[in-house]
Length: 81
Image (cartoon, one colour):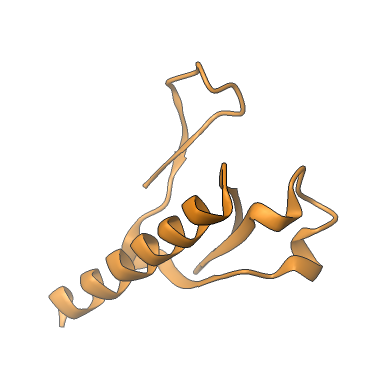
């Protein structure tokens, strides 16, 4: 999963999060509120070594992104077992 830079026109990736590294995907308005430009649309992706804060463009997009990331991480785990 790639993370784009702040500029919407920038196409270089900021980094990569591998599905096998994902432990949790959750909405935590209290913890992310101070760190996000838009707390209501911010969710967390916790990996083995880091916590990522993702900001979606809308509430619907946030729900879809979270579902897709969780499904991908769970699918990868099941595929490997």
